[in-house]
Image 1 (cartoon, rainbow, N blue to C red):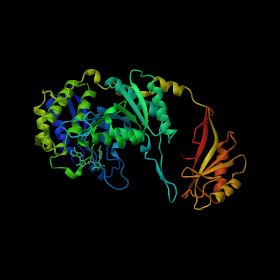
Image 2: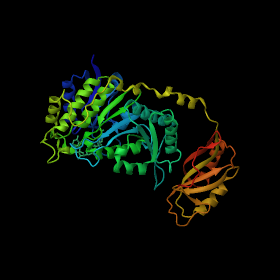
Image 3: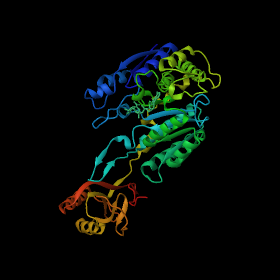
Image 4: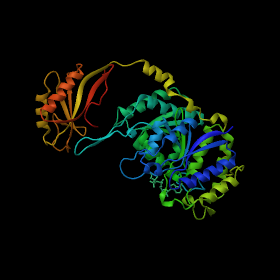
Length: 488
Ligand code: NAD
């Protein structure tokens, strides 16, 4: 029986590499019914700020599987990232990017590299919640949630187990972002205890990234928050040999999207020179996911055979080691001619039915740890408030004196920071200050009410200050739910 999938040809080189990929899929015997949809530039230009029409959502709800060519994001304000919209709308929380070296056929300094990067896809700085708060300061909100961390970390360990991977490494920056990245790291440590058959370790993302770029062969699976994963998966694909070779899957509980990691490459569009391999390998992941492992294996082995034969597109063609420089269509025809052949140098691939990504069905709302975590709602108390001001004075001591007088009642001003650096009391005259001030008021460890915060807010505004926002300082079961102030 055929499986329905939604297919978008995209922009730039999208239509060429999609045609090549669909041609190979047809010839491989893959059992697919294709629902073609339009996304990207044309849809953006038709005044749809997300670049995706209702018909696409309808098709995706029906099929649950999206094979997508790259699209061009129009320049200028007002347009939303189509990729971020699709991932978040469909809850595609896990982005899986295998980055494999194909030496000696594709040039790389890291011939033994075989890393899978699992990137959290819905949270972090990608919420798109940004504000200009003052004349000088912009803010972007970084949101990390306990369920979000648990879903992606659990996915990484399940992936490792299903794919015979030995180790999962976690990258965070929790030495600086102790609460947000700290949560990701803590959940990683907790979940890793349930997977004693898989090794686990954690690295600060900066040294981790340096090691990944230098000795990628020491890594196996790496799981990380959205932004680090976005950047490092491109680095990993590039050092493996070419961004044109890597395919990726975006997986959620109800839907999955498969695409190449590269963009629409407008510089080479329409010239029949683009490498279709990234999209093709994502289609192989799709077939595995759809439970068509034999067709997936046939295509993967034919593709490896083609690489070994030296029939290379321009992006990976190397004088001396490659045999023929071929175009997109000729490359696809060679893969088709190789269907049924096995590679000689690389180990042949043999997917099995059990590789079908059972994780898609794993609805993390039902996991035991999440259920237990949700069963206990911690006692929450407000014990203070951070009031953020736009203020163009230059003496933090003046600000401190004036705000201390305004505070009144039980609330006391305890600290003022500028960009996270304490400037009152006892600041340093060398500290560079902007027009963005965080002023902290507490009641000596006692609980305070929303009414007290409102009254403080009114008093500060009445004294002539421009309040830009407040953040409540809360304790959860007595534990402070806020950083202590001084930026580290
Ligand atoms: P790009 O990945 O399109 O191109 C970067 C370089 O790699 C170019 O020199 C290009 O010619 C080359 N390249 C990319 N894919 C190739 C392939 N398959 N074969 C041979 N060479 C290839 O990145 P960009 O130029 O920064 O972005 C172009 C457009 O793509 C932008 O509008 C961007 O927003 C969009 N984009 C879309 C996606 C997506 O839809 N998933 C992802 C990234 C970028």
